Image (cartoon, rainbow, N blue to C red):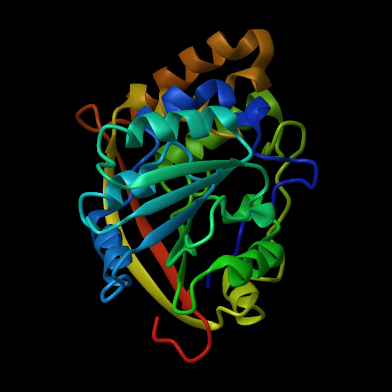
Length: 284
């Protein structure tokens, strides 16, 4: 069961939070596993002109991975409150989009409306970002705009904060020694314990109540320097939280990570989970 992390109510994934780190996000955030990409593409079997609506796209990882696999994709809508991320995503897609058109919508996901008629999404994706959103409202929006047999795909794989390993536990303790016990989230707030509602609960109460769950175990190998770059892109260890102690923190973190690395590598064993949801009567 997928239970979302809960940012503080004031926390919004806006330019103040992730905007300055768009380049680092593209470089250090893990991509979408190939098996998950092929699963997404398979949902469009028999769809003559697939349209993708990607919510919270970051730097465009999902559409960038889909384009070479789902070559029939005719249009992509990217929706985010973060202008810098949208600019980065468009730049990443431009060399590979071919005849596929791309539009961007700056605003909260639940307020999205297609810019032109005839572009009802047949696939709606939300990768590592659903927890930032007004989830029931987003699913209501999806019901309004999506094609009759559209698929909603919600994807998550946790973070280095939640991953359980000796090196991530030590890193978490180091961050807390600088920022306090509470995990930071958003631009001002802290992490709140997950609500009793899971993503499955949200989907069950929406039009997209036919759900299948898919798990893809994976192993990642991190270099200590790449973990430092990754931390700069997170809401829990971004540079501004440390103020004038950020350089000191990064030096301490790099030393810690180097000590934990085996042959210069830090291992992360994770599971990438995909929820595929259709309206009642469809086969997810």
